[in-house]
Length: 328
Length: 289
Image 1 (cartoon, each protein chain N blue to C red):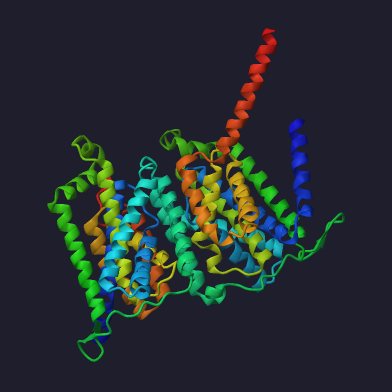
Image 2: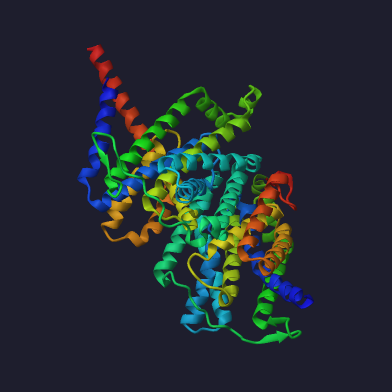
């Protein structure tokens, strides 16, 4: 019961949050919401133990597909977004054949190479990808009315509610996947791949499944991004963006569902409130680089380990006080 | 046609020379420390900026600038070893991630110090050797090729003939056995990191007058170096040199007859093909993988 109340309270805070923010902060909130989906999908991929350097490019596949489908074929934007997510999943499925012949470090380099190839194709082929300048004037979300609220997508606040709904549902689906037998098998593939294989688990199929699902959600986040900012190009999805995703995930930690999300939220808030307000915006890559090195060196289990430590201490305290009461 | 082929061949030879320097440094670092230095392209970039500062801005002789660049980048390499590669020795992914972080720091520092705009380095010499009417070899390019050959030959002599070189190869083959023989792993890691970084730095310094120097130039360099070391077999110095030459020829010819982006795609496809068919690379041995 308390859990439900906490969840409702949290939802209310998320709904009320944009009203306390300035216009530019609302825009950042939209990006943050989309990035939460990116890191959460990245964690789904890392569940089977593989770290990809191509995730942001896959996100770009969703963005390009959705933008082109709506712009060229006039497909209704929400449908184009879902098709974009599907395209990203399909591209990931195609890539999985070469990539999952590799493991660990080789997979890392292989995914980097595959991502670079896709990015170079966008750059090289002006038709239909728009070349280095990318795609401009992507159709915005059409406004609609759900009775209690009118979505006017010129307002970031409307897009925030829309993105929040999409991301919320996606997170719920990913959460359910992880809790299902399939998700448990992902963990088994990561920590005990020989044993899992000996028990009749098709390790490669599960690796592929995690990769395809994660890529689908990444594609969806890319589509959300494309129809919000209205213009995308090959550099929107370059290594630097990948480094940000990697930093958020590593700083947050990947042992828990909330770890990467925590990393993304904390670092974004830190970046926007501390760095931008203090006028250090130019130093963002520098500070991100430092945070990355320091967290690998001194906090290899991520921010989530601090949360878990605090929780287990609280539980331990409770137990202790409970015991003393009992003895009295 | 023959003349075009000859000219492209000369261009490829020049590209091969600095690619080999970068790739060999990367392989050396991987061999001894077991970690991929993602910031290697940025070490190349630092070497080029050493030329911008020492040669173009302070007007010191070019060779002095190259020496300064090489030493400076080598020292940066020592700093990297001490700061994160050594503490993360048991955590190769951590080392890789830390080097990605360091890459961003270097880019940001150079952007703040020099600005993000392209730097122009005045040419060292304009002399050109005219072989035929259409086949020309600028003297400076010839000098870069010769310098690379000399550097790689001295590295080879160092590795095969000196005690330090033996120690380095021993700890690359089997760190534990090497440590049992009294070889200091920290010492060999320092030497490997210094040499590897200095080679990237000198490659950047040598090519700076011929390319556009900017804070993000390391990206294409590291992509090329990855292709070369993986196709060559990670950990194989000879493989890196041979593949650097072969790849430079493929890339230069495809660039000449198609275009640069297609050449990059061809290179990355080669990388993927090797990863699929023989992940240990063409010259690598299975146990190093």
